[in-house]
Amino acid sequence: MGTTELTGGEPENVRYAFRFTGTAGEYFRIWIVNLFLTVITLGVYAAWAKVRTRRYIWANIDLAGHPFTFHGRPAAILRGNVIIAALFIAYIATERFEPAFAGVLFIVFTFIFPFLVCKSLRFNAHNTSYRNIRFHFQGTLRESYETYLLYAGIVPFTFFIFFPAWQFYKKRFFFGNLAYGTTGSSFAGRKGPFYKAYLLAAVLGVAVFIALSSLAALGVHRLSTGASAGWGPLRVLYSLFFTYLIGAVILYTLQALIYSMTMNHCWARTRLGEVRFVSTLAAHRLLFIRITNMAAIFCSLGLLIPWARIRRTRYILENLAVVTAYGLDRFAARDAAETTAVGDAATDFVGIEIGL
Image 1 (cartoon, rainbow, N blue to C red):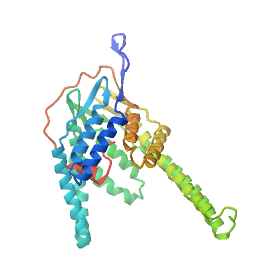
Image 2 (image 1 turned 45 degrees about the vertical axis):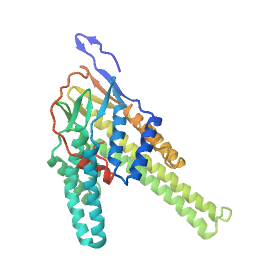
Image 3 (image 1 turned 90 degrees about the vertical axis):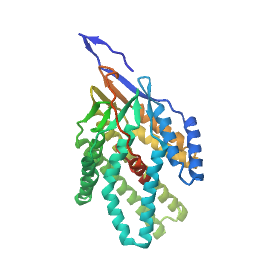
Image 4 (image 1 turned 90 degrees about the horizontal axis):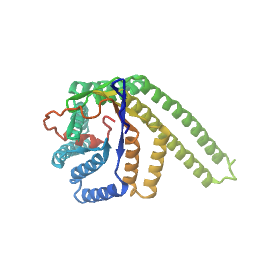
């Protein structure tokens, strides 16, 4: 955190950097207990596990010497889990015995999904506070249906050319509707940086695909013609395997590239009253963290999942800062009604990303 200086009576901007104080050891104890209790209760404890995890993560996010707080209640999340689980079981049962009706259920879920997304964002925001002031999500159902039904439906009809624009609209829906107390946010992002990120990723992806396909074709040709007598079939197979393994790692970098470029842009174009944000994510650093995390999880048979999550969370948060000339004391709280946890449970259940 910087210090405020006065020049001609005007306050200078002060940068408040986020810090993450959680440790892998502490989170591992929470994670292993959550995993054990969730398994022996056949998933019932998942709601309590989610609350314990979020409370730990939120409590270890420090901004200007103050932590964040998560207020979600396990009972509310459990009700949401039960509803979503019932819908999923109904879909599986009808798909097996009445496939035509399963299709109807899928269409129905598609139309209620934007409603669940909006509820999820409201639930998460309302149950997060900083300095005893809660966040709020002010997005409307109309905006949610435009973003997750209309714009999403356009994507396949444009041969996915509209996909980067859809990703932009999802970010705009989140960043432009977040509020802290009585102060709402504004978002002035553009679609251009999204198209730039996805175009760069597509060019790299096509180049990698062509290169690896050529190597694979060469290996198969050598194996089939006997030209690789010095290699041996097993060596050729190993060569193909590691070629595609390297290819998968390279393609995985594209996600890190897109994430870092788009998130840096979104945070830079977001304002919360007099507060602006700065994100300094680097694609190569995020890539290194992801690759080494994957290797650690694989080699530890999953036991290093907590370490990997803490490591990635720390990097993302510690490359985010807020900048303001008036400090963080000019926000006021407001009263807010309770929100449902059904949408939050639905989001986790189907494994999609909302907002960030």
